[in-house]
Length: 277
Ligand code: LER
Ligand code: MN
Image 1 (spheres, rainbow, N blue to C red):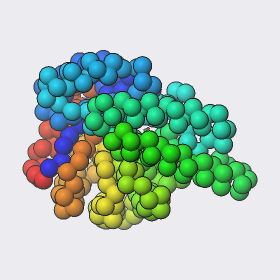
Image 2: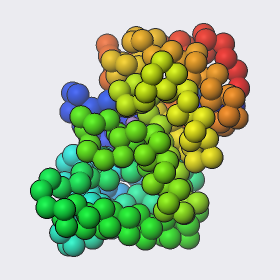
Image 3: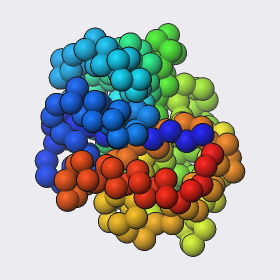
């Protein structure tokens, strides 16, 4: 059975694809009242949130935290794991450990999407160093996550936002090579719509990633709510059911025309497809 989560961020711009911004407690209450199973928290750093109050309000309303999104650490503070500056990369690792600590209390996963960073332009040695730094940092974080009982979710991001591991298969192969069972893949339908090949590409990739799939992000082709663009969510849901996916699909898209309508209409549309898993 697929479970549905709504995104809330502690900060962000008009163009950030998060449904809600600001008051996390109020958002959790709204999502619980409106049929969501969980909420995905996008936070910059640990003291953005009061973890214990969040835990309490979730228990009170019988709703979960599915995931912690970490991209604000990149967009607001410039922290990333491919950084060839050892001090700054150390800060990125420390920041992600903070997120893992919170996830361990809230029993959820930690997403690494934008905080992967980019591979630098220029010399081959710099590129290779960045890739080595990235892999080593991830393995170190996977060890930490294992001790804390947390799963790390690596997200392929489209070519206009990042310059490596853009497609699902590239990311799956990289995860396979890393060989840690604490690192799984997060597939985002918005990025997949740009990167996957052919008419059945999105479904084929979901099937190919099945042994590694830990989380989904749902957004339509225009990064608005499911049903507002041209992605075939009936096909996506059928494929997820076929592989017996029982994790979360978090609604990560633009709050258009406003957060309450975008979240509720998105969920209504997905449920109207009547594809139960
Ligand atoms: C993060 O989940 C993501 O999808 C990025 O494209 C955010 O901009
Ligand atoms: Mn995403």
